[in-house]
Length: 244
Image 1 (cartoon, rainbow, N blue to C red):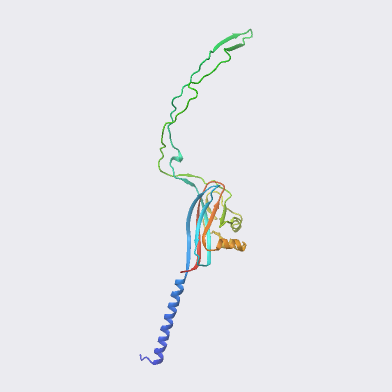
Image 2: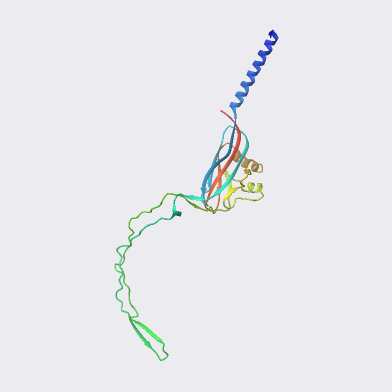
């Protein structure tokens, strides 16, 4: 096919446009990224005095959130010791003696006309003496033999609360599931695709509380309960950010 001057100019223009579009899209992809964390697990243990604390990192180049949700799994509390924590020991008591001194026990019995028996101890006042006095009990050096293993104990905490950066989200999460809340051991809010939705909860908060929870940085999430518990936070986080 014969190429004319006009067709050559058109082809050059098309090629130049394609290169421009490709370069623009390439630059766009390098400068804007999406973090999509689906079901990442963090495990902690806690009790009434020490909450289970989880940390979630959000880029300082945050553009906007697309998803911020999580589940809570309550499981048995684990202690790294076998035989349910039972150990054995031997204690020896030495250098101890007991003597009864200055005691005279004479039993005198008499029967009256009604066949009633009376008995007296002579002397009625007497002493018991321990020799030596004072004395000590000595426990010999010994060791505890414990085999390697794990012992599991039920998580007995109730009245759980969830805080993010010091803000209590418990009432908002309860409202999302019509008052159903964390009770006993299991997966909460449920084992299906339902999660506690942070973005939905902050829509009902003040501007100050919303800013504390959504601002970029290292987010501190606390699970508080009034007993001993083992907890896993399953995190679902998706957000766009500028890639530097």
